[in-house]
Length: 278
Ligand code: C2E
Ligand code: CA
Ligand code: CA
Ligand code: CA
Image 1: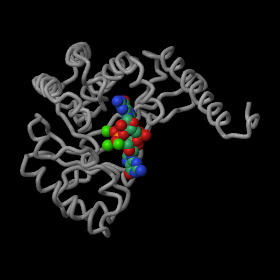
Image 2: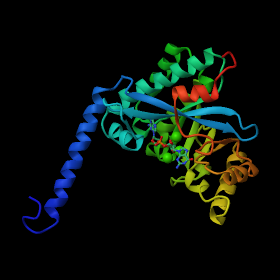
Image 3: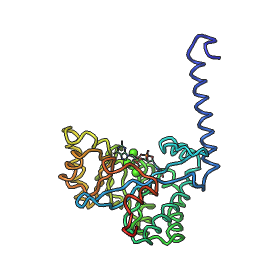
């Protein structure tokens, strides 16, 4: 059809169609593999700013197709989200995170494990039950479990989100606001939610320490967050200059390529949890 009428229109719809087909194939592959080890977590360390030792990890989805090639969560999550798949896949992943947490705790490693929860998951009435079951089935200590939620997720349905967060906090879980500063809500408003941790988005970190606006924004976020007794995590720390500057501002935890990219389980364990037993 391309070029028949001389317009770009046919060409455009053809490529859109190709995109839709690719998407349907991905959705179907994602559906077939729910509950299998094609859904894998990589782990990115979070480091204590004072001691430079491991204080937690963020679990990040790395889905692989049946040829073993990894697909970015940037492609995968929206497809899971726009279908109902995020619920079943999410349930599996929550359980995997709790299993991993339990396995580390059994080996005497106590650090926080954070997982990402999308809007569709938070708005699902079952979420609290799903997490309760994962905690009970695995026997993990929930005080080391963290949920990362974005501001916009909380703003979808403020009253319901508030109710969910209260129930989750009662389980002993910690709540983190992810990508802070990129949404439209104020921290004053967010303080109505029972949150523990604020993750300052990479957007405000990447031009430190030279950009005046970034400095001003980081300073004020950190001051306000500290007044609200929140722990601050700086995301996307890539350079030593950023690290030093953030430490001077009193940030508690650091995460980013400066320390490590998200690592496959075995690489993470070899690098961070290796014992001296040989
Ligand atoms: P996010 O939660 O903001 O995760 C941080 C992203 O930044 C990760 O990308 C991480 O690999 C990347 N990153 C970490 N440090 C640096 C750095 O120093 N520089 C740069 N440039 N990037 C850095 P990733 O793994 O591709 O994940 C993308 C997004 O996909 C996540 O953003 C999160 O929103 C979503 N996601 C990942 N896993 C899950 C999951 O299991 N469930 C849900 N609902 N969402 C997930
Ligand atoms: Ca996150
Ligand atoms: Ca983030
Ligand atoms: Ca992000």
